[in-house]
Amino acid sequence: QVQLVESGGGLVQAGGSLSLSCAAGTPYRINTMGWYRQAPGKQRELVATITSGDNTNYADSVKGRFTISRDSAKETVYLQMNSLTPEDTAVYYCNAKVVVRFNYERDYWGQGTQVTVSS
Image (cartoon, rainbow, N blue to C red; front, side, top):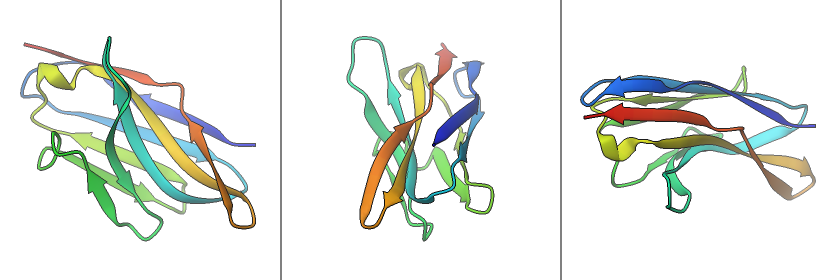
């Protein structure tokens, strides 16, 4: 099956940096991987995604501050977060779109990791 194991996160002061990583254990091919976040009382939202061809997409709110990268050999996706603000406080979830059979991909999610930015 597919398992996404996240690490990183924690508590940081505004203006600081944190990094997240997510390792996918699966025998299947992975297409797009990404990070989403959910703040209290809000819907889950996209933060950044990266395709198998390393094309990236960012939410406007994190452009220029966050960088997503990927090591396809290790099936691992990273998120470097700089210049953090209290508005970045949320639970961050890793996502992987896994090709589980021909021409069909399925979404998998990590367990979530808390990022808290203090002012």
